[in-house]
Length: 153
Image 1 (cartoon, rainbow, N blue to C red):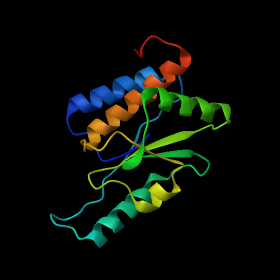
Image 2 (image 1 turned 60 degrees about the vertical axis):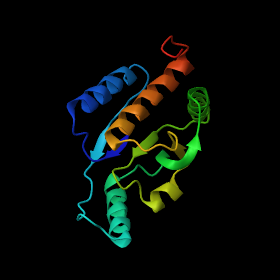
Image 3 (image 1 turned 135 degrees about the vertical axis):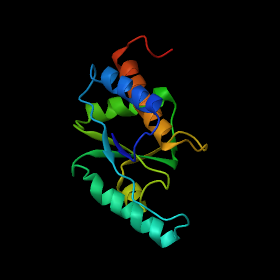
Image 4 (image 1 turned 90 degrees about the horizontal axis):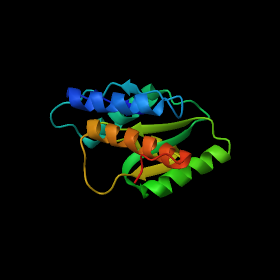
C-alpha cells in the first residue's frame, strides 16, 4: 500500500501497524509513505494538479503491479465482492497489488486513469490517515474471507 502523507495522530499509525502485522499472516504486506507535496494556503487548480502529478511520480509504482486507486469516484464494493475480486486476481496470476491512498487533495488523474481498479469507500470524505486504516482493514477482511477465517461476520 502506498499512502500520501503521514498519519499524524498515533492512534492512526498504531491501527495501521496492527493491520499490517495481521496481514503478514496472509501476504507480504508493505506500507510505504510518500510525502505530500507542499502547497500554499489557497493553491490554484494548476498548482494542485502539478502537486498531485509530482506525488504520483515519487510513488514509483512497480510496472507490472495491479493498481487500485482509492478514490471517491471509484466502484463501491461490499466486503464479499472485494474479497471475490482479490481471489480472482490471485487465480489470474496477479503477483502484486498496489493500493494507493491519496493525501488531502486526492490522487493525480493520470494515476486514476492508469489504475486497473478505482475503489471507493463511499461518497463520504474521510481523513487520509483514517482511509489508510480502513483500506488496510478491508484488505485484511478480504483475505480472511478468502481463507475462511472467522474474522468476517
